[in-house]
Image 1 (cartoon, one colour):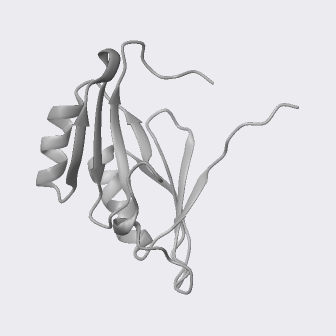
Image 2 (image 1 turned 180 degrees about the vertical axis):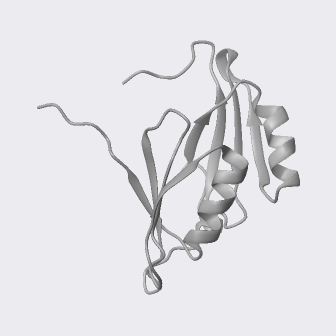
Length: 129
């Protein structure tokens, strides 16, 4: 069996605004925009991988700001997580925690909608699955 991860979907309150913020601040690219009221957005990273589907289903939208970061977060590889964190705080993100285990730098943050993401720098770049 040969399968490839296509996307992960998040039900969020403002998918269009969130996609715009992720594109402007995290280097993502919107590759599909759907109509209201669902306002579905598919965004991908700079490698061209399908990454996230952001959509809105009002009856089921969770409050991500109340979730513990280790319950759900989106990992982003970058060269200098701490400098990027400073830039992202200025753009409306919230810093949660910085850790440096085993030669790594891991910076946990929340976007303006409370969704957790982690900036990662590992001794060996990108985990290969």
